[in-house]
Image 1 (cartoon, rainbow, N blue to C red):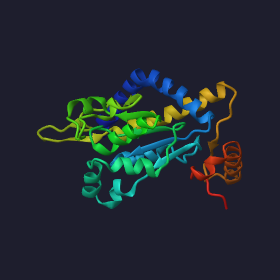
Image 2: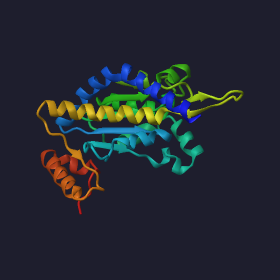
Image 3: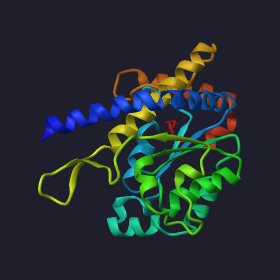
Image 4: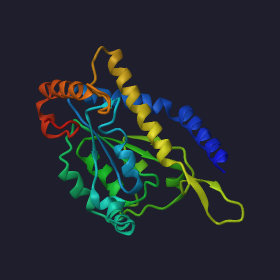
Length: 253
């Protein structure tokens, strides 16, 4: 069945390219301005979505001004049942948002395939109340097919400034199995990674077109790049000293 899965992934990626390109460009323009003003792009996702939160943070070829919010209680290292129940707990996001000291000049990308659980939805709401630019990465078809688990009945796509759709199917698993009640082959991680990397590439392209030099991280597994990354990091914090205490993209020796 792998060939069928490859075909499905290609179909979804084509749909993303056709339907999300304009949104990616618009959001990249907003985010490039935030970075040039000394802002940070925060990323957040619970459960499996934490993988996408990490996708563009501290990544080779990516932006230094990105910080992933990685809450252990919301990751499966704490146990699947536990993290699931916490993601469904109203009020938890307020604590998490305040603990990360996200500023009005920053941006937050909230990742949730279903967009129905309280923690990601309320995280977006807290950021929005604080004047932070908030972007959702979600599955619109799935989200619109289910009810919200939030006390206010909201879903992620309804409380964000911009929405990026991973173009998946309800339930995420995209391949039906003849004679079985389940489907297989989840697509949200693959699709989400493509969208986020496309967003980063577009941000960098916009900054370069404007004659601005983005702070880009090179792979730490190529000789000589430790020194390069250190120099770029020092240039960044010399321009925006407050980032020394807010970014964990490079630890000085």
